[in-house]
Each structure stands twice: as structure tokens, then as C-alpha cells.
Image (cartoon, rainbow, N blue to C red; front, side, top):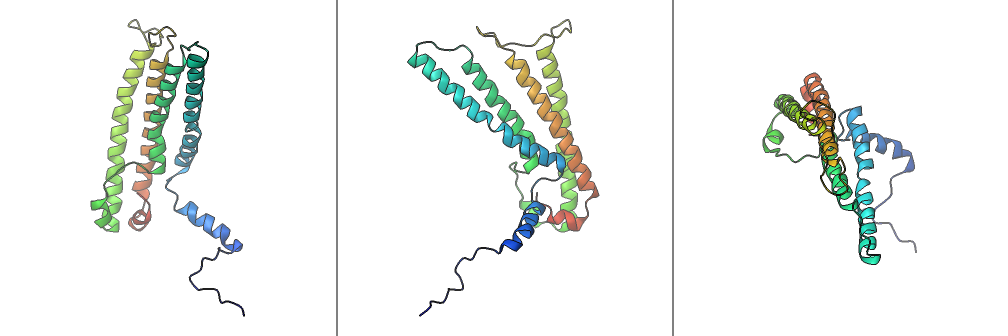
Length: 203
């Protein structure tokens, strides 16, 4: 006697629906433009630096406690790599729209008000990124030039003495400049968006 399959039993979707499923996933993707998608993919590549930092830390442990021959470069290199990861996390979070935010007022607003709130939010983000980029430029300039205006990278001052302080400040400037470009594109998209489309866009 054959058993009847329960109606609530899980059934895998037909294979011919797979393109439609993938298309739907792309439509609800949090990235708002091609630059965001490029930055999101770059962020995934940068995340592998965590594995690199862990690997050279393991090398340091073996050299220090196994061979009594500690290195002079591992600690500063690990700090530099982790700093780069944190700095580039800003553009990646903006690209994926994964920053922390409170949406109580936004969720209760209508489509037209949401559209204007998106524009106002993107405008404030652009102003903030421009201000921070200006400050980061002066910080990097001071770390990459001596008082006479000649190119001279700020160094750590340790026995190895790498130019990591200047390089980190350069990465901060790069990340903020990139976020400024992202914010500009987001504001342009918000200005051109219609209220009906803006209400459906993930924020």
C-alpha cells in the first residue's frame, strides 16, 4: 500500500525556476549600483587578510617559543593588517547597506516621505564623508611630509621601523574618499528615484 506524501512536506523547487530565483535575489540585493557591487566583492577579498594575519601570528609563536628566535616584524604587520581591514570595512558596510541604524520613523512613513528621508539621509552622509575626507587629507599630509613639505613617511619608531603609521593614514584617506564617491552616487539615485520606487528600495 503506497503512502501519501504529506502536503506540508518540503519539496525542492523545480530546476526550471532557478533562473527566476536568481533574478529575484539580484533584484533585492542591498547594493545600489555597480560601484557598490564592486566594493562588496573587494571587501570579500580583503577579509582574507584576517587569515594572513593569523598565519603570520602562528609563525611568530613557533619562532619565539619553538626556536627561541622571535621576529621583529610580525606584531606590527598584524596590527597594520587588522587596521586596514577595519578601515576598509566602512566602504564595504556602505556598499552592502549593513551599517547600524534606527528605522522607527522610517518604517512608519509613507512612500513620499520615505523618498525625502532617503534624500536627506544621503545628503547628510555626503556632507559627513566630505568633512572626514578633508580631515583625513590633512592627517595623511602631515604623516607623509616633513615640515619643509618634502616627502617623508611617518614611521613606527621601533627597531624594524616600518612606515605603517603613514600607510594606515593613507588607507583612511582612501576609504573616506571612496565613501564620498559612494555617497554622491547614492544621493543622485535618491534624487532621481520616484516615491513608489523609493519605498521598495532596501534601506
